[in-house]
Image (cartoon, rainbow, N blue to C red; front, side):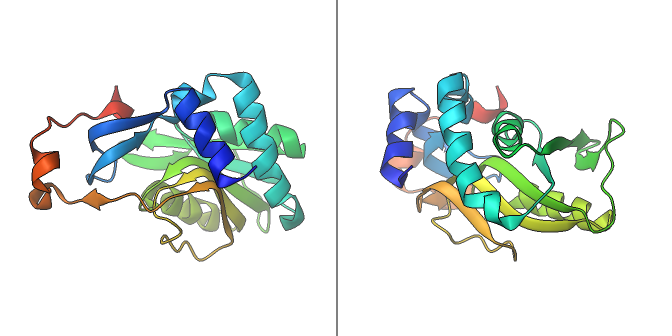
Length: 188
């Protein structure tokens, strides 16, 4: 699947939004990838999952781990496509934690799967959790890399869509963006 093919699926499903958005990172943007709108369609989930699985298969992982909520659907599908175990981390008191009896064995090779990455904060938290349990991060993959490849996670990283989407700190908005009320679509 090419970058353009994946981007077309986002546009066709209405999952690429235009306006003024506040991202999870606190940065502001003119575009927002509402992956849930694309990933509600199981044929699209299957296509994205297959495309990511093809990129990740050579890494030899045995488990897929995703940060909840965004990474759950695509993470589980990648795990299904690869025939691997799937686990997730979730928020507890504002931090991601491994719960629900999930275990990571020392030396276990894991893939981290996320829906969208801008600065990579949740992925980095997940990497730290895997390493704290003596696991090995074989690679990271996401449907959308909003950094255009600028996020360095220190491990092999893959994406289906790679775009350098402009982001702005709240106190440095361009006039056209400042004139539009901001929304937080990922939190509703």
